[in-house]
Image 1 (cartoon, rainbow, N blue to C red):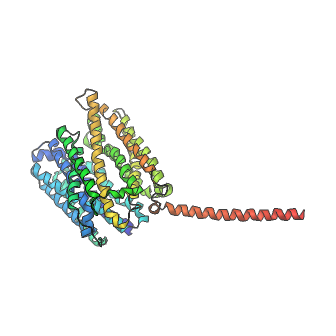
Image 2 (tube, rainbow, N blue to C red):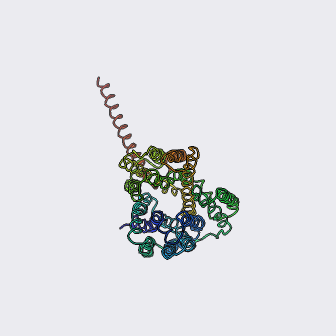
Image 3 (cartoon, rainbow, N blue to C red):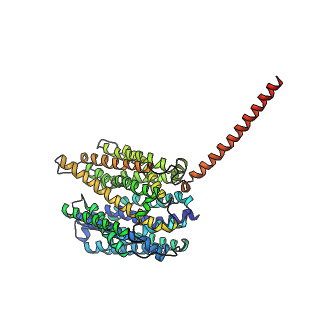
Length: 495
């Protein structure tokens, strides 16, 4: 197998564990809560503590990879995630479970951005689109098989095995990483920005944690607003600090690059809308339509199936039409399919729902591949670790914000209708709002240069080939015209 396929699949092993873990735990939450003696609502603190851990430690991932080597940090991160998984399986109380989830979050904070950094430093930019697609195929399998697998293991075995299945996957990932990934590290690692890490960590933790619990009724609203407020103040202080340091943990000067700026701002808006879908859709299926968790999972998995189908075509489509054209038009198309969820009722055939989710997942997957790839089109090798850190933080915040916006829209609809019980009618406005937010991202994608990312998409080669063909055709036309003119002149002289 070529390096362009092998390395993305190794990185995907880590993403597979993380994505499957997130979907499986949601399915098995009631069983875990009953076993350790707490309520499912209280146990949601385990999910939010994981998100908190991610937000705090992601900013340190880039410097850590530069200092100790991306391969070593990636392998250790998988190991830390495995230890956290074992801790979850052995937990007998809420405290034990939360601590184990925080440990998983530390591993996850390093796995995803450092894994992406390994990919970027190992693969030629011209093969980056295809490599990104290969990396995300196994990672998409997690959300597809997670809900039914979690339900099956919890029902017929024990929820503990949900976390223990990460162990063989992690061991294979570490072995493959040590064997096939080059030990690349920065020759001149920058000074570690401890103050910046503290300010950014507090800021991101406050914002991400506050947005994650907003609308879930886990904490009173004044505390939620206070968390978000503290996070915003800390991030503001960090921005002033970053201007005075040569090696900030989050380098906002990279936003001067047009493609990275579009990927960050436009990608945030697009993910904010799409990120609400996994939160809203299962609630609509189970609470609104009365489906069982298994039935709901079998319906919603169509979205991931459509996403997997797109990965084989993404590189070819982007190469044909270019990043700017695809990302602008596709943002609107994806948003239309997201808005279509507002039309779902109990009378809507499940087959039709699955078809809409399947096609929508197809277009959303194309957009994610384009966003994740074009971000690095103008980034130099020396700045790659900073760029991956910035992109990873942006992704984390956008997903948390999407859940918060979706939950807030549902609660606002219930308050406006004076309803105390959640019904299917309360979801439609939320789908409309998040789809509009996703569609707004098209403006920022359109602001990219017309030739944005041509070097990595391969479209530049197509245009050069077309240009050469046009030049040859022009030469032939000129020669033909000159020949005809000569013949005309000869005929006139003969006449």
